[in-house]
Amino acid sequence: MFDYIRSDLSAITNRASGFRAFRAALCTHTFHMTVLIRFGCWSRSRLGAPGNVIGAITEYLIRVVYASDISCKAKIGRYFHVMHGQDIVIGSEVVIGEHCKVFNSVTFGNKDTEDPSGNAQPKVGDNCVIGTGAKLLGGISIGDNVRIGANAVVLRDVPSNTVAVGVPARVITHTSTSTTARA
Image (cartoon, rainbow, N blue to C red; front, side, top):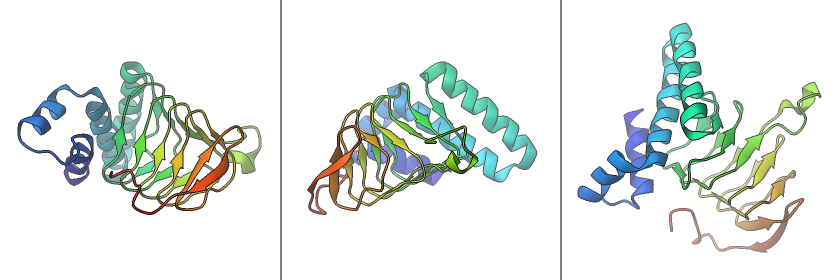
């Protein structure tokens, strides 16, 4: 858990150390939210039944304090960077790769909650940037080095090294592998 938290802090501070890292750890609300997510995920995976209770309490705390509905059952890779921790929804079956950056009002969730087969949730690759208000719905796969534009509604797979925008989202350009979330 602490390795993940250190990597998340590194992503938030753009790999800075010293006072800048200390200030971010102390004063950045998105880092605090990420620490809660990591703690909830760790407790659910390591502590059995008590961990499930702790995870549920952590999810509730995230809902109340950050107005975000983030499941501590989601699998989120290292160097996770939430730009603005408000109104984010991450479902329990979501998988997010490493070096991903998420802006506010983003939803990773089910496409159709009435249909039992509609409970599949997105899988996001490494080095992705998900723009403000984007909705990723259903059992879709987002490749590596993908940028999802603001307010895009993604209902289909998005290949690696692309930019997707619109409602419904469509690929508008292919990017080079050098334009990643780490930049």
